[in-house]
Image (cartoon, rainbow, N blue to C red; front, side, top):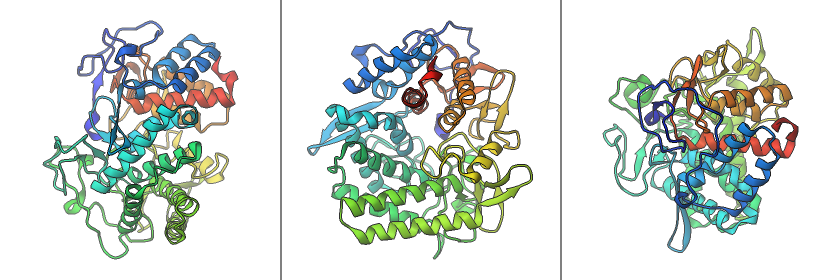
Length: 473
C-alpha cells in the first residue's frame, strides 16, 4: 500500500487513530491492553449484531489479553472508518483504510467481510454492507483500473501520475484483486442474506466492465489501454517500459501491473491474483445464472475462469528442489518464474481462505511449506517472532496479517496457538494490529491505524470460537 508507509510507536493515547505521528519512535513497554475502542459517542456506526457477538465471544475467551485484542479489533472498521448514507434512495457506504481518507476496493471489501455472517440478524448492518457493494459498483464504473477512490471528485496527491487520472481517484494502480474483492463481497452478502436488490442495473454494468477488463488484460490482441508511471525514487511505485511493465508472452493469464501491496510486479502474471480471479468469475457466473437469468454472461465468465485455471496449471507450477511441486508467485509466459510470497492478500498462503483450493491440496501444502521457510526471501525469523513481510516496507519487517492468515489457513492446533502468541507479543501494548513490526523489536511498527489487519484478526477469533474454542484459553 504505497501511500501508507507510517513508522510509529506507542503514544499516550490507546485508541487507534488517536496517536501522534512520528518517525520510528521506540516505544516503552506497556501493560496488557484494556479496552482501547474509541468512546461510544464517537463511533461512526453501531451494529447490535456485532455488539452482541462481541460480548458473547469475549465472554468465552479465558485469556484476558486475547479478549481485549478481540474487543478492540473486531469493531474497528465500524467504529472508525465508515460513512453510511442514502444516495438516490439506495444505501451507500464509503470505507476509508484507516490513516488514509481514501477507499481501496480491496481493503473496503476485506474490512467489512467478518460482518457478513452477522447481517441476517441486523437490518442496519445489512444496509451498511449493501452500501459498500453499491459504492464499489459506482467506483468500478468510474475507472476499472483504479485501486483507490476519493469520496467525491477531490483530486489526489497522486494527480501528477502519468496515467489517465480522474478527480474521483486517489490512486490508479491496476491490480487484479481490486476487481475480485467486490465480487467476493457481493456474492458473500447475497449468500448470507438472500438479498438480491444489490444486483441492480448499476452493479450489472460494473460487472460487465470487470469481465471486459479481465479479458483486456489478458493482452491476447495487443497491450491494452493501461499504462502507469510515477516520478518517484521507489522503483516499486512505477512501471518499466513506458508504463507497461516487463514483457510477457500472452498465454491466457491476466496481467496485473501491481500487487495487492500496491508494489509493481516483477513478472506481470501474478499467480495468487489470477487464481482469485478464477474464483470471482465463477461467483459471477453463479449470480448471473441463478439470480439474473443471464446464462450467456455466466457462460462467458466460466469460460474465462477455465482458461485462466488451465494457464496456471501450465505456466505457474514447478518442482522445487526441497518442497516438490509448488506455485510460483509471478511468471511471464517465457518460463521465467519468481518464487516468493508477500503478506498482502491474495497471497499464496491465503489460497484456501479465498476458496481457491482445499487446505490439504498437495500443491498448496508444498507451497505453504515453502513460503513459511527461509527459502521465501520475504519470510523473516528472529528470537521474537517469525512471519512473512514483503518489499513494500522492507526487509526484516513482519506483517501481522501474514501471521493471522497462517492461523486462518492452519489445521494444526499448536501452529495456531503459536500464531496467537505471536500476535499478543507484537502489538506493542496498543491493543491493535499494525501493518508491520520489526522482527527484532515489535515496539517498532508501521501504521498505527490499519483497519484491515484489525478486522482480519477479529475474523480469526470468530473462526476459532466457532470451530476451535479450546484454543482461546
